[in-house]
Length: 128
Image (cartoon, rainbow, N blue to C red; front, side):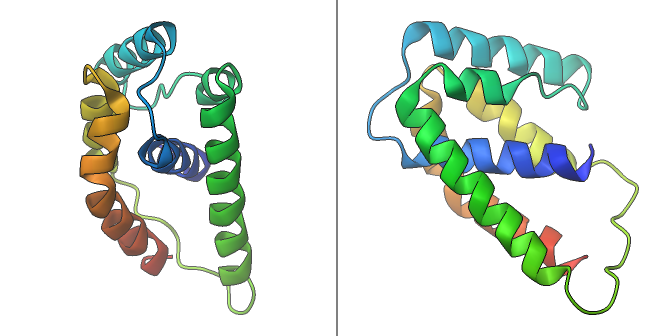
């Protein structure tokens, strides 16, 4: 998984956790399809941007999360060059995305996993 994919999935999962209502059925169906794609190919995160844009509350939260993560990455990029990311896949993030996107209510699933994702992002951030 590429660094931008990690940021996109993390931002999307964080945005889901910030929503107050379940997703519309059509959006949930699209997430189920992405979960199936991730099972077949963990590098195929689909087009989360388009899904977010199709539901304004999700898009607003997603854009806020993307901005925050990119700003954090920009701050860390000042100074010495970062250490390279490990080459092995981040299976924990992929599994978390599959579980959340496969759930009947992805918003509720994301809220339940939020603490795990925050710890994972901190781990990824420190490894750079």
